[in-house]
Length: 139
Image (cartoon, rainbow, N blue to C red; front, side):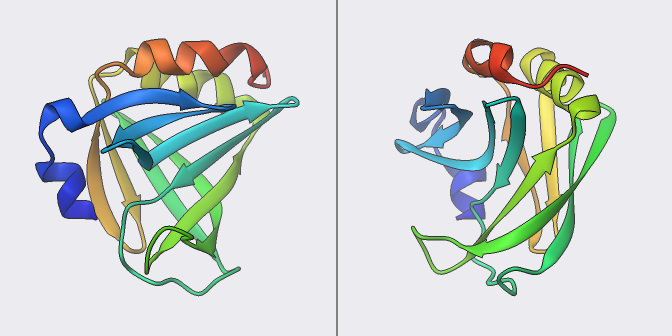
């Protein structure tokens, strides 16, 4: 799946909103990076890799937006859509707004997980993330 994030035609990739989650959509499915905000909580989901991680285990993952790195404590879960895992973690109140704003305004992002790293295009992220930002926790 990582190769599809890198090689998919631009028309097949876009940022979109699904419920309370905004993220990169590849071929109609959120993958790579998604942020959810609801009920005063924010959560990050990292996906799109075929590596199977130990379910329930904690992993540190990083997202670098332009030149600023954000680290997240995540837990591995089975990916219901494929053979690999996804990483899901809470985003602290102190980080939620600046992180979402960085993604909205940024030009490039890179995700680093124990399963590898990949780039995420941010074109169109501003509109998608802007629609969920009011539900994100303020610092």
